[in-house]
Image: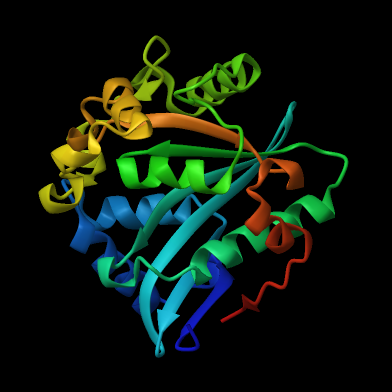
Length: 238
C-alpha cells in the first residue's frame, strides 16, 4: 500500500484542475447528472478526503459537518473510488481517523454519521465498520430511526419518503451506471443484500436509502477502533 496516499483538504481550497479530476472520476461511475450539478454539490460540502495512487487521483469522499440538537452530524456526500483500487484500505483508515479527530475535539457531544446509500456495496460497508446502525436487517434501532428521519426531512424535504426511509431522488441527481449497479444473483440470498433490495428497490434509478450510525469507539468493529482513537490525519492546504 506504499503507493497510496490519502489526505484531507477543505473544499474551498481545491483548484479548478482538481475539481475537474474529481468530476471525471465521478462520471466514470455515475450517469444522469452533469458537471454543473456535481460542482454545485461539491461546494455544499466542507472537506474532501482525497486518495492518490502514485501521485494520481483515484478516489475521494466528500463531507459536510453541522450541528444538531442531538450532536454533531457528519453528512457523507459523493464517495467514489475507481474500481481497480477498491481493495485498498487507506481511504477508509483516514476517514475513520478524521472522525476520531472530530470526536476528540468535542468529546462531550455525540457524533453521528448520516449517509445516503445508492448501492449495496456502500451499505455492506456499514456492516464491516460498525456494530450498530440504522437500518439493520436483524434488529430495530428506534432512536437512530427517529433521528435519521428527522435529519432526512430537514435536508431533503418532500424527496424523503418517511414510510420507506428512502430519499426518492430524480434521475438527474445521478445514479450508478449499469455495470456497477448490477448485483449478481448469487448475492441476493445474503441477508444484508436482500434487505437492501427490499428497502430500496429503485436504487438503480438513483433512490437512496437513509442510514445513520453513531461514531463512538465501542461501535466500531474491533480492528478499526485504534484508527478512531489514535488519529493521525494529513491535512493539505493549497
